[in-house]
Every structure is written in structure tokens, then in C-alpha cells.
Image 1 (cartoon, rainbow, N blue to C red):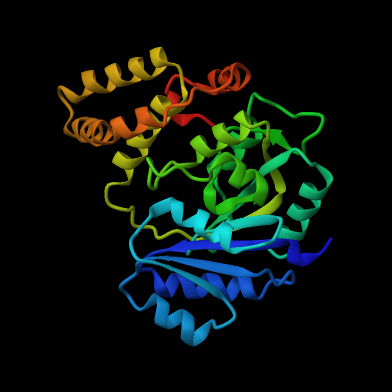
Image 2: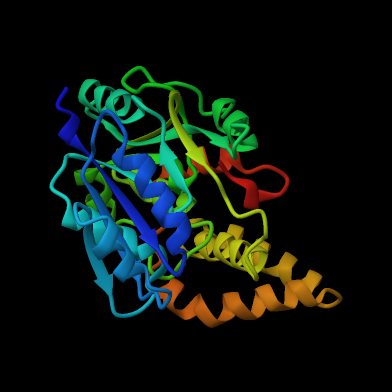
Length: 292
């Protein structure tokens, strides 16, 4: 396996110190992957930092914040067959990218691989690991690991051609909970999406929650339903939210955010093929926003 077959894309905005640590970790890997940093119009000196301390890193500077769509600019800037995503607070364990490349080489239908994520200095397992590993979709004969319809973006590796074939992360969602929609779109195009715990990523998130993140996550889960799931499903979820909004200011905020983006979602609506919808329905728990 050629180590240069895997590149890394990082989308960042105004997190220069954290980005610097991530780059030191990635550039010290034995695989020595090419790295592309896509800067979402930072104003904190990120670009100066990159030019001064990391001249070997390719930088794509965006004139405005494009959210998760920035990753697609990075994928296009690379010519490696496989692309690993890192956030500006995550990186890959030594040997992880080599192992991922071997799995892609061996399984031509594999479109996206979700890694096992270890969190913080103590390397605690992310609770999502267990959720993904026990996905009721189970294994497939021509794929490694366990089939899933969700993942953590900063702990995922994609086949570049599959990612571009599926259209990448969707602009309607912008950022936050954008992974399920990409998993749907990959599966709809016939690509496999799996969780492979022998590929390991490290994540060191800021312990302070991002303002508005819970609203964004709920908004995007509902928009994903409108974009890809049956109308009855999307309508039922919207009715539930509207009922909750009568007495909950948080739910009202989610509903307003969703309605503002709903016309764009309806224009981009493309229901899932029957077999993928069946898989999505299999994964719908009592709280369908937790689909994996």
C-alpha cells in the first residue's frame, strides 16, 4: 500500500491554537499524509500561522464561512484516492490511515469508513463507538466492519470518487449533524458505509459546548427527513416539533430555523431508494433523531 494514497482534509474557522496541535500530530504520523486545510474565513490569524509554521500544508482560503461544505473544497484539492477528515481538534492514530487504505483497496464498494474514536487525554471511547458497532444493519459480505448510516465526520475516511459521486456534504445543512445525510446519499448510490473499529481516531473537543449546537443538530435532523425520507415521516416529525414548540422556547427556535431552510430543502428533495429507506427505517429508534 502506498502511504500517499490517503490525504487529510481539515476544515477550520478561528481555532488557530487547536489547529496547530492537530497539524503537529498529523504531520508526525508514519504515513506522512498530504494535508489540506480549508479555512472558513478565519479572522484570528489562522492563515498567518499556516504560512509561518506549516509551509508544507496546502491551504484553501475561502472568502466566507461555508460550514461543512468546506470539506468538499478540500477533497477536490487532493488527488489521493482516499481522503480522511479531521477537525481542528482531531487527528489519526499511527497506522490508522494505512489500515484504512488497505480496507478500501480490498473492498471496492466501500465508500466511507467510520473509525473508532478515542476522546481526550485519557483516550476514553466515544459512546458513539458502541452505537455504531451494534448497528442492526450488521455486516455485508463485500464490506468490512458493520454497516451503518451515520458516523462522526472527524473520524471518517472516504473514497474520493464515492464522496464526489454522492455530492459531498449538503449545503442546506451548513454544519452540525450533517453526517447522516451523506451516509444516505452514499448508500443511495450503491456505496457501502461501515464502522471499522480497528481504524482509530483521536478527538480532543473543547469541553465548553458550542452555542446553539443543540438547535442546529435538531434542525438538521428534521431537514434531513425532508430532504430524503418519505413525506409522511417528515410531516409527522414536524408536527411533533410544532406541538412541543407550543410550550418550549427551545423547540420554537428549532422550528423557526427549520422553516427558514425548508424551501431550499424541498427544492433539493430526493427520496431514498426503497432498500435504503428500509435500512433507515430499521435504524429509526423511538427518537428518530438518533439514527446511526
